[in-house]
Length: 181
Ligand code: IMP
Ligand code: MG
Image (cartoon, rainbow, N blue to C red; front, side):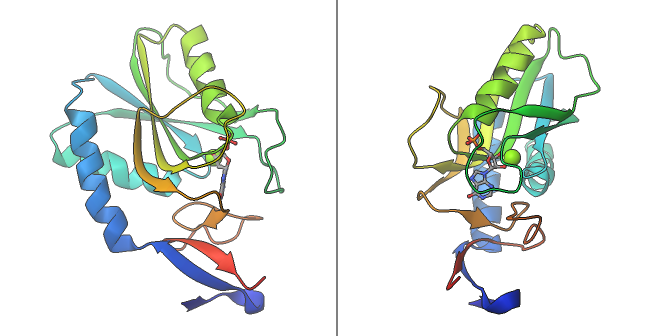
């Protein structure tokens, strides 16, 4: 176990090696769907590490996706979804007529991904697929599933590999849980 500040300890759930192996498989699953020309839209901030690794894994399959970013917020500083989703920063590219792959870190209540999907749909995307690192085993507030996911995740709060609590732990190379708080 890695020692974290303020006497918190982190238990590794998904190691860097486990993530790397699974991402190669996941990229293969996405490539098999023949979605090109593909526009990857990473939902910031939490997905930035996952998206960075995923697009390079997609490149190794021979894909050449375009990449854009949207910053959405439903969590603020709290660990519990607030129920509303805000656009903090919008995509730059026109998504009309595009095959869009929305990439997020966690599918939890589903509100964030459902919001992003509705937004892309309202802007006349040609097709919309969703891909998350973690498919959390929690009740969804809205009826949405991920088309692609790397791992099933228990209903606990996780950090690392881009994911934070109060802006901390994004830099960790693994996905972990905080224990002994
Ligand atoms: P949803 O809208 O409830 O599905 O939540 C999805 C968003 O909440 C994700 O994009 C994450 O940013 C955040 N989130 C959900 N669970 C966790 C977690 O365990 N750790 C860090 N962020 C989380
Ligand atoms: Mg997020």
